[in-house]
Length: 112
Length: 117
Image (cartoon, rainbow over all chains, first blue to last red; front, side, top):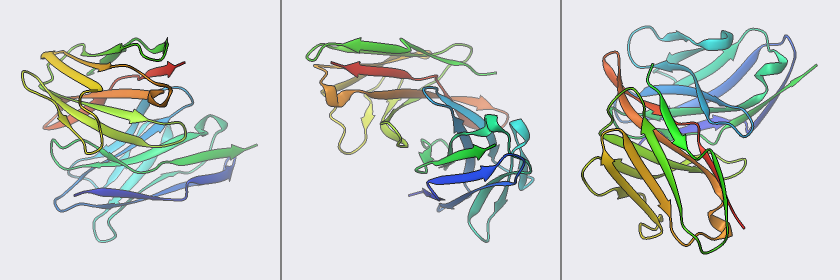
């Protein structure tokens, strides 16, 4: 069965600094990988996804992630953090039509 | 793009009453929908898989008699929380599988916040 590990339940960065949120996955078949953002009292918003093809995936709001099969990783990055990036971020994995399996989430704080 | 709606967006009810939450795929047909539950400051946990025209498949530990799921059409799945109690208070999110390019993607609804008094 697939699983996701997000390292660090809370990450704090300064405004303008690099954002790096870590995600490692376990899957018995080539996975589909996703990053979602959730703002307080709101639903999930898809940031980006990897299905096939190019391993570097660009998403919304300047975020990108790279699928590294050898490292079973799909870390999320953004070159320069904005205050509006403060939110909860979830990495998720799916195998075909199976339901998404989510990591425990990482809360990103951005310090002015 | 594929849009999934949920109704209501929030509900407050008294202990012992039942609450129905609707999940609709607005611009596509979804033979499969999923129901998730999210407690405060926690991740999403899959509750059940809802398949159109057949019984839902529940995850281990989820009471099927308490959380009734009906997927009566290709665009609607409902979750009914029966005899709700305060511990059922949570954020309930549905998703529907739709075609996105050449693979099937899950599209999420905005969630329903249930508070049981």
